[in-house]
Length: 165
Image 1 (spheres, rainbow, N blue to C red):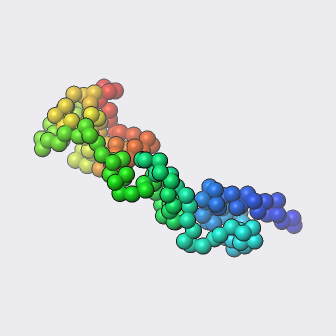
Image 2: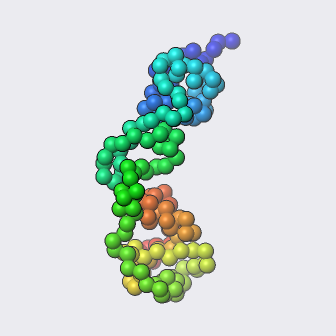
């Protein structure tokens, strides 16, 4: 039986681990090698495999380069150098809160869409007093609403959009 893993170059494993920041488990799934053999090749190539390895990251808000522990880098999609950058990134200057905004939005939406108690209405312009159909959307949950509107996750689609009625 021929060993198929010999054709995998150590340099490719090093690039996956240090540049692409894949974990040894992800490399294992991609290449079909054991984690022990992956770590052995990395050590022999001189790549650091410490748990506290640092990576250079660029702040998604201000563009400043800073260092972050690799394990923490892997846990989030967006990275901010300080709390001020994070809060500035999620701030919505067009937001105008109003106590009755969501209740009235639900009443308007219910004329065109069967809105359930767990559904969340969203005002596109941030003004809760603007209940025009083309300004309203409905998300399946508060989690979807936050991800899509405040964290700019384009994969989350609304259940209903007033522009399409």
